[in-house]
Image (cartoon, rainbow, N blue to C red; front, top):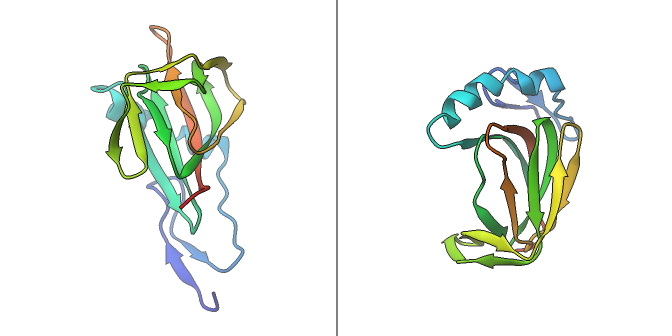
Length: 156
């Protein structure tokens, strides 16, 4: 890129920034937490929500908040990388996706992940889930989880 372009990144997280080739986006934990109340309000009815922060050529970033189990899923083209900001959950990965149905091209959803590996997640944990891997986030009653997501395109 030779000139400047202006991009806006989600509400109060970052103001409009002049982007040049190689400029980095920087998020502090406090920046992320400043969005938590808004996400909690959005998730009140359904138990979970997510919001895209920024899109790039081969990946994009999001914030996600849950108070209930997530759907069982497979992303055929994208890997998920999670950084847990607050809360806890059990992540089930691998195994098979029970009741798999294509929700949109390359995105499968199911009722559960059967035979997967269970990993307890907490603040500061980082997880990489390769494209094509069944996964599901489970929450105990009363628990919540708030996490930063990077979705990286691995396949076309």
